[in-house]
Length: 482
Image (cartoon, rainbow, N blue to C red; front, side, top):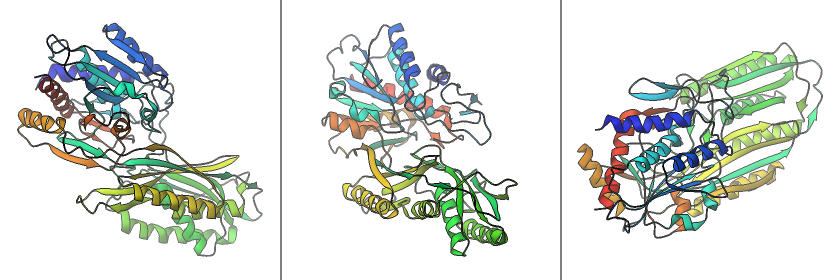
């Protein structure tokens, strides 16, 4: 392995960590990538969505080879640990490099998918590589809606596409699930706080969270749903609850690692509430204690009452709806052992002054299951008096039984490491689903280095895996030019 390759890729990545790039706010990173291409005297274009397309001619003797597209996304999920001061629109990522891994100081790292972008830039900058025509497509807003759905098909007129948004070295993705965001909203109806009441704060924090696709079957707590369940149990014990605050989650496509609420209850019910929470904790810990070792449920009585509370109908309706909307694994594949076929995740909730809103992100590799989850969500919304809409549809990507790229990648990985490449579909949305609609003839794979706990402040990138993946990418490109 070549340490110079690793240094080059990490240097490219470190430049990007200086540039804030949350989804929907990619102007600065887009400009950086355009300027980078111009500085390397490469043809570059930025489309109306902000995606950056960089072209490099084939090396001598390979000018007319089929075009190989490298693809990654420039945006990142921006989350921070509780108590960490972090402005994702202005603050850089503070990277910690211990020589084996890179992480961030209190925030998500953005290796998903900054490392993919960095690998593509390294390839484009390497004039010693033998290759056919290369194109890098670096897309916007992959994490919260997948803008590439609306890109023009002309950018995908290559023969091969290598997606660099995969998170396990030695694994190759050859198909993915589609997805839909299902959005619930209603008017927030506020009232004065009743007399003779106490305010209780309940907080779920420090849970594992994680990716709502590849992590949905790992048994991680959804803090929003669990908090709503806790409130339901309190209500079932005859306690009237008035909600003053309810918040949780940091991204629609991440399993919420925390949630909090402030409720107002009659003073006479205060001890009953505490008892209900303790009983809930016992059941909760029995279910999740071996998985969520660091998670905490904290309860406290506040000195001051809030200024207002939701109406009984609005508050109870919200609790009811959050406990019954589809969440977690929906169906498992009957054909591929261990593969999640369909799922849903309640990702974030916001109770604002005017509107209550939350979203469920459903994923499925089978159209019927996707339709069923959507029908369930819409029916529940109607029953609860909520407005409902769906957006951000992402199509699935079917297995290509005639792929030339897949066996080439597997042979290249075996040549480099002596190990067999694992070929697997994934229960998550990668942009290849959108690209398949643009060019049905594209031969595609997804590869990447090992990333752990993406979309969380614990996000970690394995440096050796970055080195291996970059060398694998180089070897694939060389073999396609042979």
